[in-house]
Amino acid sequence: MTAAERLGMSEYFFVRMDEFTAHPERYEEFQFQTAAQAVDVALRKTMNYMEEEQAGRLPIATKEELSSLWQAASRAVAPLDSVFSEACYYKALGWLRPEDWVRANEGGIKTDLEFIKGERIKLIKSAKVQPVVKPTSNLGQWITDKEHRERLTFVGGGLAVIFGALWTAFVYFDGKTWINTFFTKETTQNVREAKAALPPAPSPVPAPTTPILSPAPSPAPAPRPPRVVKKICFGNGHDGEDCRSEADATLDCGVYKRAGANIREFVKSEYCPNQPATVEVIVNHGKGECGWTAFRVTCNP
Image 1 (cartoon, one colour):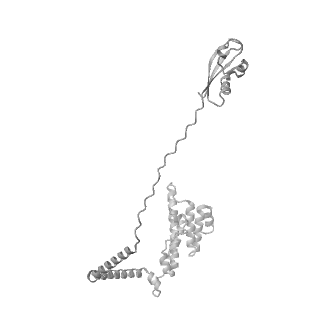
Image 2 (tube, helix red, strand yellow):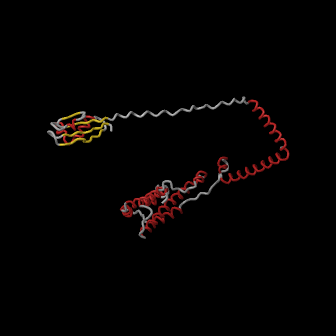
Image 3 (cartoon, helix red, strand yellow):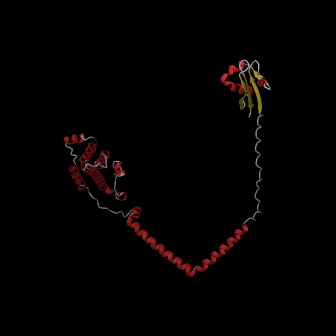
């Protein structure tokens, strides 16, 4: 279904509007043509729908689209035949509500396709075709007439060819030398005047030089923190000389027992706070009150 038909035939008028403008007395004829075309489109789409449905195929058009086409036909027929317009109106309603067809038949309004075909034929037969009278007194209408425009175009083209031929003959035979001399003198004089009016050429300005900048020095690396090694001894009692010797700190058994399994982390946090560190056992034996244990802790290894 075309776009115009999907719009419900609101602008589906195949009427030669240029003829209607030039011949307003044919308005009634154009009305009949528009009404017949609207009915023809609705009839054709409806019959196609019924054939597709009877063949078990899915129709291309929808019931809503068929209803819109019959509403458009009803509006187009209304100024010419009120009975026919009413039949098209109920035909449109029935596609959305089939009970409206039953109600229309009960009221004596026929909506079957055979009745509509017959009314369409009667509508065309009742049309009055007016003879076309071409205006001759109005100059504007005379010029806009297609036949007159063609004549004017033909005459204008002929005159253009004649004037072109005459000018070519004049230039070639009589005016060729005169025209060449005139334009040569005129061109030479114009060039001289243009050169005299030109200001002196400015001296060339040297292009600015861009200084080459040395790359910025890279920042000096941060100084490495010093490496510090300490010996920490834990224990009480006798036989602990190998642990206490050269120890930086000696702690008793109570501290060792409170630290327990976290003794290495305790040593790091106490003697290398907020610094990377390693801890290793260098003395470990069971003498004295709780044994002797010495750790070597290295800050910033």
